[in-house]
Length: 412
Image 1 (cartoon, one colour):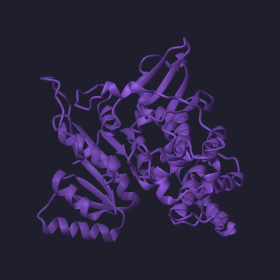
Image 2: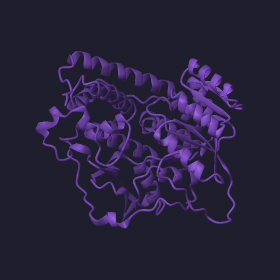
Image 3: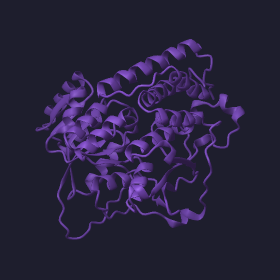
């Protein structure tokens, strides 16, 4: 259970249908926050199935606590280990599966009413797509799946009338603001960005940025890759692509504004000049609860202190300072393979930066080299998406080898 959650108020005597929840990435921060919400709303939500990856200790604890019908882990060996631990502890009734087939089973279990897709990267892509095909309502906390295969996922979701509800705070905010009008009444979407730790750092100092400096986000506490992506603003670029696909709008209708306070999560501008903003605490449990409860709103104690609105600043992003954002807009215009390559090359480049093999600006240089070598095409199947993803990763590795890692990241 996540610290700080004190429970929530109920809506009185109103009866609810108990939603059975599947979680891809149950041991990560989104997965744990989802379980926290389920614990606080036992009359609304229950655990049906979990995909836990490689964290066997956490997977065992979750199985003992929640007794899912199915739990999936990364490998056959880990499945055998977890199965034996559960048997020794007397925990019965939990089917242990593994690998891609395991995550697909977790996502498509007949009892599942709602899937929280929170596996980092493209690892959960096949399971998420299978869930769409199975007609499961989905809460998307994995922007990489939408970036890499959004064209396929959204087409399948629209064909099957399957809800794709964003959990990412910015898109969740957009979704809430869009409830005020029709799609035809929307002029543009505004995604807010904190600007990260280097918003005011002189460009001349960027080559000297250390890993430790880049991992100090001014607002959010996140995983290592997403923290670096926020520092380069590539994360915001991925969100631009995700917004285009989730809300079926062109890149020209999506704007980014730097908002250091991170109080306004996103805004929607309507054709009459009205701009609606979504404001709330910086706590991922709120967008998760919103998605899981949609179309209802559930009363909770996640309240916002209005005193935090004492100062609100907005400024345009500096594309010279954040070239990754420019590259993302370019990829959004081209779509298809370029969006896949953007995400894949970034993963490889960020790993290289974290390993101190390239400098901070080397991340953007690596991505740009891969995009320049990427042909324009639009994969039509998940298998083609995954093949394109692997090709882009290999190109990124070759770029790093050719560069000779001459831009090594400095140490503190």
